[in-house]
Length: 209
Image (spheres, rainbow, N blue to C red):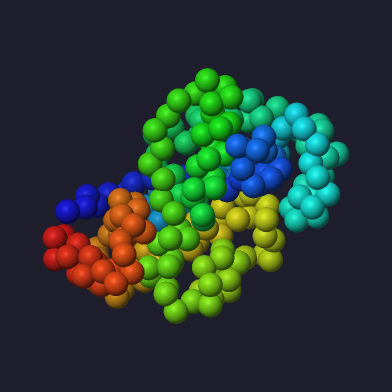
């Protein structure tokens, strides 16, 4: 059985210099929102100086230029502030394995070791909206007609849209299955359930409330 509470979660997004910290890539921007009881109550955003040159593809993809990060705070400073922002709250990201790797790598650089309880909105959306055209964030934002100003691939904008998607999925589960609350732990576990077992899993959780 899952506990129900007015819990807080942190929804985050990184923009990065490449696809993996294993290749020496670094975070160049972080954005995050804090959700409490289904509402955005706080935000965190910063460019960061990664100490390396951003290639032209990433500049074009994100709109973040070398000139922009040149005068930005160093990554270590930003990540220490972000560690204070998240405190002990569970984390959510779209394609969470990507953001988890960069978060862990940047924390490692400053000697910070933490256990992250991560939920993935992309994996959860595959279970809740199997009929969607695909499960990219931009596609799901339009599919669910979520609030957006049209900005994508900037960290805070993507974090905000991911938060709205997370709330929409929670609301759809409440309306379809009769849950009083949809806590982080249920959504986290749902993302790991085989597609063929989603209905049975949700019915079991509903009966356990």
